[in-house]
Image 1 (cartoon, rainbow, N blue to C red):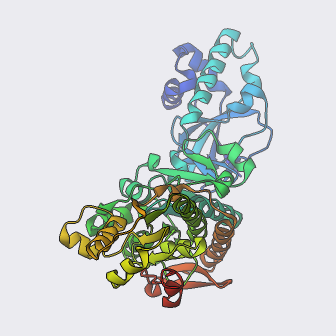
Image 2: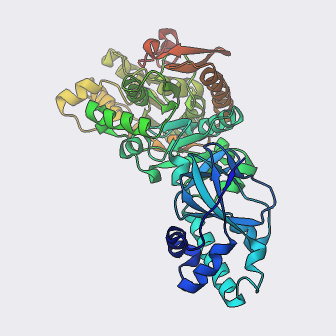
Image 3: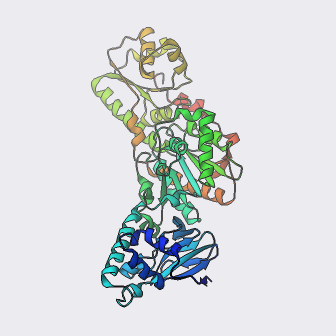
Length: 498
């Protein structure tokens, strides 16, 4: 219980506090002195509640000493120090308290009753009007609340790497499961780049519960997460951030994370994002948990299905089917570059699903004369070439074309001479922006639930994994990022000789 303290009505310190307070800035010195006899002074110990959310309010308060915090549904969104007002909203429209205030440190506050402001024997009506106008000015400043909300973060999500279907669904489901588990979830606005910058405006607060969102939606950066479940693209990532490979840059990010009192960091993306979060985890104190969620069209994380791969294959296969129909109609040979920098998962599975005639993977090495002999007499051909095909050779040669063009040039050098019109198509990036399909949305949900359990169990440096329907996790030390495809699958994608 707070302790009531005595004070002198001519105390100059009280006069100065009132004189500099925003609601009273337009009052004369005499009018301010009229207020002092109406005040009651209290002393609060750290942790004591001053007002509670939802209760009926009749008083307003001004801080004299110490630090107090304003909370909504358990989230600290603002702090009050000497000269700061709170509680005035209840006096303006006579509604329940919109949040709770508790003492962060031992401190003193003054309170006054709304009924005294309405009593003309105590406060002249003209003075009361000026005071209420001051309260209204104070209320309009609330849209600038929020810096305190980002001062301490339970969970920080970091997305990086190339866009892929599934970034937004995993963000939504992590927000849902973690908020239900009692965690406050935040996300870097632009991946590692934002964490290195470290400013308040570089972060967003994700809210899953509608009632909580309605309480906090006026605060900059607060976002309602459920609509992300089926949303295209990646709303919170940078276009890669090469500087994050530098240890001195990683150290800046690690310090910013500690300054924000982050308890758990979750990296979301492909092999490059894993490299970044793995390096960052080694610079953070052991008590800060770190995790990784694989979101990548090319499935370049070994040992698990990756969020985005199912949509990527579905959309990729449909694109190939369109090329095959056109090739059949117009007697064309299409050589199409598709995603697949290392293993070639996306190129292979898209080709298999669509029935393309050949899938050329990063590791593929063919007898080009044999390939030419098979193509020359045909009336239609569709060949899919993974973007990583002979990448090192192309770089060494200074070749400026894409993988499909390089494969065409190899065929030409080997004697390609067909009546088909040969057309090369570059990597189609619109696949990245496809709407996530049901398989990827379900996979995101399973991984989010698994990760929420791992966090609650105080685990760290793990990646949730799902393979052949089984849920488990993989240690950072055991994650492999060269997800080569199985040779028997690659052989299925060669229809030129069947």
